[in-house]
View 1 (tube, rainbow, N blue to C red):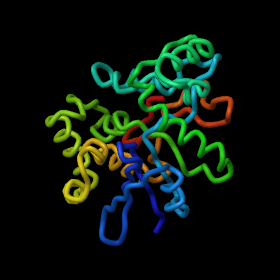
View 2: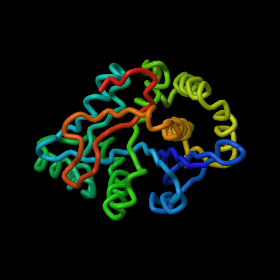
View 3: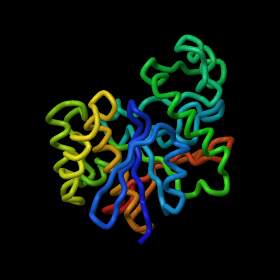
View 4: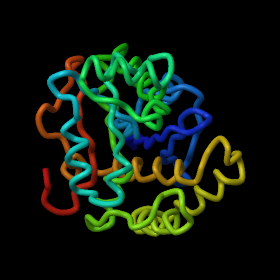
Length: 244
């Protein structure tokens, strides 16, 4: 049986959902290198983190534009502006904004700077495993939920009670065991390390990763790759004809 993995970043590192002989399973890793080493045989690892990064000729990733279009208000705000590669390891928000403006003419938010270490971690990994990185792809949970919910964006924020329940209902249509998984994670981790939305986001990534190649679609557009050769795209489950 081919192994598939859905991944989301969390306070404790990286939260992964996969499947074993008993059903859905999860693991927590401090570093992305540890996660990839644990799943060397996986066919796909779908991860909620920007992979291909903007540069001077493409200061806004086309996949981000497309994602905001399909999500609409208010969910399009979940698609954060992505910093350029040179700004990832800047010393603080002020320095990151200065570097980003110099390279692509755009500022970055404090929220975006907060996830820059995660982006940098994955970027370094993919740069070091060029021949083995074909199974690692970017997803955006909001786009994946939109696809699974008959192309309807979620109504509520993922951090609200209503939003968690809404997303759980969508996931249960495709994976009834998600409630058992969520209860298990809650009983064995601290909320400061793993939030409920981390589990739900990793699970929607996993469900998408398990789809057949014919069922997968991509928000990409032009340009579809950054100067380092990394794809700028978001994969999702195609239930009807593609939109991109």
